[in-house]
Image (cartoon, rainbow, N blue to C red; front, side, top):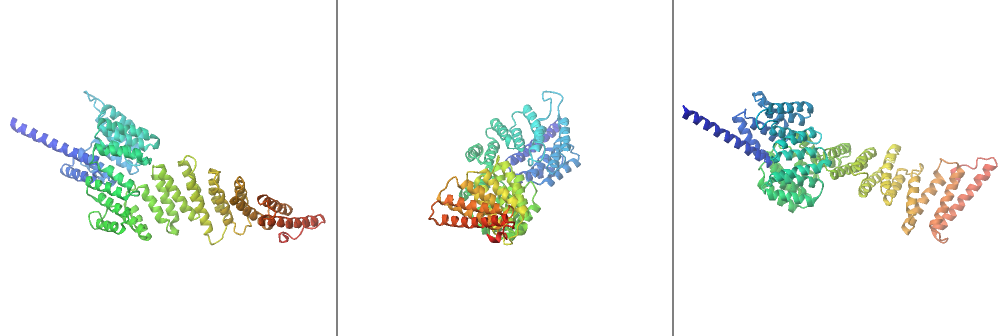
Length: 587
């Protein structure tokens, strides 16, 4: 009997060791972001033993990492329904609830129950279970910055680290929670990732995560430093090669191909890998080959891969088929999980929709979404400026002002001069191309406000003043409204600081515009004042071109004397009891 019992115990231990090793293998796959391999391994374990808590929990995590939230929810619920009422599954199901927009406080209740259920009250390990605390921190680290409560996660992860200070994964989740709190916490995130690397110098993920921070800050030198540390720690860590490919894909396709090859060698051979290959062909300008790769994916196991539609959209856009590009980007948004859609996907959709006059508002909507979803300030600014240009082309100046204020807030006060220049040019060009000639006072004031913001932001640069004057003249095509009077006055004040030849001609031309306005169209002043303003302008013209023999001086002098004669007649008639003349036609 003892021998039989011993054999049974030996068999049981062997099974436990095999199971534990299998779980460790699956977790290792997840560490390397080999999600397909992890899911396959864990699915087999769960199928073999539906009550294997660790297999069920980590299978749910694999689904979460691949944005299959419904699958994660189902696997956790199936485990609970099968009687596996375990704290790990409470944490996993609470994580899915948060990611699917559920009540964060309700999820926290599950987390607290899990902590209570696993807290030891006896022995040397008395206190909360650090693995459960880490699972809770992992849950709060998941998703975007609008999901969960990272501060709560940080609190639990600090508790976990105090109990189990040698687990680098705790510090990775801690750093991710700091990042969810915003860019101001980047330093704390780096400290957490650095601590993970200090615990295990071969922990490539820690260096990689620091590199991601510097990549988001567009600090290539530091990005390279930490990515290379990740590669040195573990040359088989594929995610770093994927990020390098993304970095170089729009800068250096040769370098991108080098990193793509390393990624493919070390990553799962799945739909993601195929997509990267198709994306490289696109970046390399091999559109037909990229399109062929997409069709191969569609004919095989990747036919339901959401990003396949994105690859089609990019290919057709590059090949000039905007209709097909729009169709596929629409399909992508329909089938992809919201968390799967990247900010640049929305930005790309914006550029596609902008090619159709009837979908200009949709283009702005997608670019605005890109701003909201992104966490990199430089990219947010870039998307805002793109949206502003589209708004300018469609004449939506109110939207431009909203976007402009948002851009200024992101940039600490103002856009770059180039960004202002492009906006002002887009607004002015849009006004010039308007063949209707219809005047909209609200639209004009909004457009003028945007361009005036340029001049106010860069008062020592001429372009803001120039664009504002041009926009006013275009908007007031018959000059009857006097819209250009104030912009011209501001521009002349600026130009007269340097009376070089070019500036003199511009100032003289501006005076000519004002002369015609006051002599023929002005209606807001008594006639004698309008005449006098016109005369004063001719005097200013002579101060610009002082040579009495110059054509400009003679024109100004002659015109001034003619208007003076008209003013004298007007005053004489008025003094004699008349009306002063018949009006502006006498001028």
